[in-house]
Length: 362
Image (cartoon, rainbow, N blue to C red; front, side):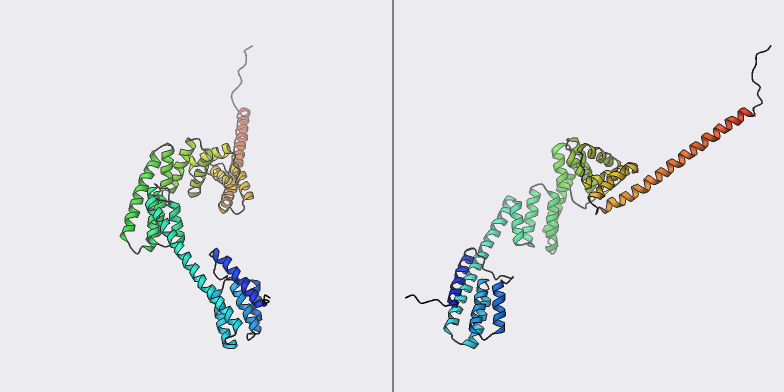
């Protein structure tokens, strides 16, 4: 006859099955968020620390959460009270076995991660595979070798502006390594060549050169964005051209050529998003048409009330429109007064003139 299993033996068996399933997935780390069963078992154990059943349930709950190291410590501490109790020793042997297997799987994971890092680094350096560069950096974010390899890959891909950013980040951890300064100089040299091609070239090659030369925050950013807008507009790409012009206008207001382009392209594309409406209002202000600027600026703020720049532009447009209205009103009044004065002067001249009218002699 098969002997009946005690509740603790059943829990131990179920814990073993759970561990096997977890081990196969290599997810054998202690859960930082304790399960409800683990919390309840801990509370029961703290209320009766000398009760063997409470101790064993707590160790089982720890094992179920993959906290095998904690389970071993709890059981080893229980030996001070329960000595060489057979049931406790069985739990302790199982917990130690689980802990040993956890360490084994951890070592396998570390080996796998090391192999993955080596493969990604090789692809990054030898094949200029940018995805592999990013994957390697995700594993080792501040590794100088990987950061420089990514910069090299970007430079090889003819993306000097991005390469400058990568090398700049590497410089922060390089401790004055002159090799990093050499790479920065090479990237800047390529960027200048691209900047020249952007400004003087035409077509798709010039557009690609603009992209390669664009560095956010650099003094050349406005000129590059404006040139991109011109090239895209010339190629019949109205929507991206408008985006380029809007980006340039955000950097530097009151460029009349950009303002004219934004007004024309916002009409032709029919775009009604908040950013486009705000840019249209700003452009109309630049073109000294404040009354027309009021409508798109108000529409932009209705769609996106948080546009601080649009609020400032609206206030400016309202002041300018009011001033222009006052000026026109004053001009009309002045003209009317002048006309009245001229008419009065003409009437007086006729009334008091000494010149006799010419008559026919009898």
